[in-house]
Image (cartoon, rainbow over all chains, first blue to last red; front, side, top):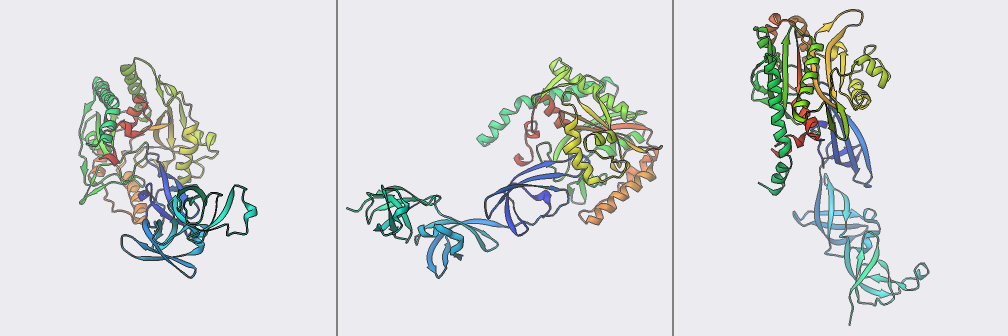
Length: 188
Length: 309
């Protein structure tokens, strides 16, 4: 596409890396060529950078869409999600999810950005609620404070929780920091 | 009407009221100087072929990018002092200082050159400040600007040597020229005074008269106030063959890029042999209103900018 067609939120592919246009500043001498100062956000790592273009420059647009998808099941090293709108299924390698995979429970609805059919990013809800399966299962208790202990969650993930949390309790987890927030309910 | 829109429109009401006072002031000024106010078509068969000014096509016609060609046809027919306030349309021009539909003031004087037209501009802007504020200075974006004529003048060559470190007459790099103009030259102008940039390289003024001599220059002048490009003046070219040659050069460049279909303005070229020596200028009215309203964005002086239409 022509640089003149770019506006805020256009997604561009630059050297194979997708960027979202966060801002365009248009400057043009009356008779001269236009200068476009773009602020770009890297969709892979979230970093921002500035880039300047001139009248007539061509850029490559990519279509990145964001949809709500439900986590269905794990298949080998891949996690399978289903788009809630069109029921298309997408397989995401474990590496892309990183440590977040340990808080992913079947049925959870997550936000997935897709570029030309390829999943770019999976964003979990900020908070998820998960049941505690086993207490003090970890041998790595030396890494935590005296008031805490490690528990295993129903998804298999390990979490540091306060000493009063018991097996069967439901706890709230902050998926951005992988930390315990609060106990939501307790088993009687 | 959404709440958003009504609060935006209420917010800029004082600016729109002042805008009308400025129109009155402009008309008073030119009528008292013996000018005739004219009107020329907005829907035209061809526009001046300029590399970086793109018209909106309308079926096989265009929306006018400037009233210049028709106003010169009036001059060729014997009109001597004319002015016009009209809308112009330029595709893809949208930013803090640009709206694809904007308002232009143009005036032409037979027997005048670009420097006399710059003197008109100085008197016009100074007179408007007096009418609006009874003052010779305005405050724009935190800076006091003294509008008393004459305004400081600097040649393109000198300005580029001082601020950008190169001479555009020595070896012209047109792309670097535009970038350095915006990033280095304009920011170097004293912020408390308007600035007039004079005498452009020959290829940078397709409708201007060329002053020949040891160092030929295009008699073109641009006015900057508060960092805003306000107006562009020429001693007008009236050599039909030369004008046609320049237009064809621009058309060739445009066609090489294959971007758009360009129509040579034939009737304008036919009239040029009768065009007397004259000077003229195009002044961006929206930016003039911005200055007098201390507005940072063109959206603050237009009721319905592009994104709000």
